[in-house]
Amino acid sequence: MPDDDAAARAAAEEESAFSHPHVAPDATAAYGDHPDQVIDFYAPRTEEPLAPLVVVLHGGAWRAPYDRGHITPFADYLARRGFAVANVEYRRGAALPAQGGTAPVAGRWPDTFDDVAAALDALPALVREAVPRADLRRTVLTGHSAGGHLALWAAARHVLPADAVWRTSGPAPLRGVVALAPIADFAMAEKLDVCGNAALQLLGGDEKFADRQPYADPALLLPTGIATTLVQGRTDVVVPQAVAESYADAAAKAGEVVGLTLLEEVGHFPLIDPVADACAVVAEEIAQLAW
Image 1 (cartoon, rainbow, N blue to C red):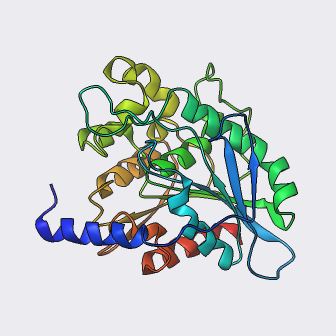
Image 2 (tube, rainbow, N blue to C red; image 1 turned 90 degrees about the vertical axis):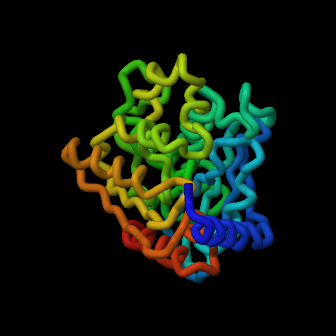
């Protein structure tokens, strides 16, 4: 458990990140029939004829109360720095708490994964219509927290088990992935009780966890062959540094080098807070892959 000072700082960081007004997109397109199967698009606020595309997957422990709205200031921030942005929504857990719990259940199996796969597959056609200036050849995938997990997973679909319905025949055409405080290693996340056993809930509970983990846990889907950087606050008490380090270690054992940028005196939410210095670091990590 964090001490009182750490808890107070974490609360202040969260309050700051959630204090910004939501920013309306320039366009929205559906990739399915469900209300959550939509992508918001933000055009680059600069004059270059073509701009790299950043695909954003929001966090919130895959739980229903946390939709893409809270990350729209971050999407707008990236657009103001010259990126085209696609902010992806997806189906999350039911609004009711898990049995015996107080928080809403985390995620839906297989719906959450169905949606991320479908959104990424539909994205090229949708972005050409919504943001013609987006350069699909310079696409970077990013995500925060649970969205960081989904970003790593989406970039690893070509190494999913052979019977996985989401498996692709080859790697996604990405310049890279920048995962922000991601729930990147489910075994470590469960050991540390990250977000109230959210990963366990996402996979359907104790009875399903082991069977489904090979299809969902990024730490088991390596190497990907796609440039990957993790950005992590050292004082993060939501998704602790040990989770990112465990993923990086798993990548190294699989023969892949994964970047791990550790930020001093930074917790979970400054990574997506436009007024935080950490957010500028995130934008630079994305730019290094995109340009």
